[in-house]
Amino acid sequence: MLDLAAAMRARPDVIAYPMSESAAQMHALHAAITHWEAALDIAENSTEILPVCETALGVVDVRAIAAGSPRIRCALLGAEDLANDLCAERGTDAVELRPCAQTLCSGNPCGRD
Image (tube, rainbow, N blue to C red):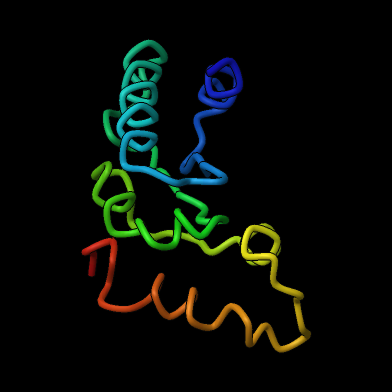
């Protein structure tokens, strides 16, 4: 969390979490951001979390990940690492990742408007 301490001093609008795979990770990050917002006199809940789903587990659990913090408004698909995790060969049209992208996007997994 040393990286987070340094980042929070810059008062970011959003903190990206690469290789997101669980709601527990989001809970822990939420708590850490809350601590730093208070310590640095940053408005409470003003820092968003952007989970980056770059593994099969992250894509499958995107709904739980998105529900892991009210700071999450959207999620991002990390195509290169995901293709590697799936042992898929990347094509220029990324057709091999379409099912993952559809899973990530279907039904508003973050539950936000």
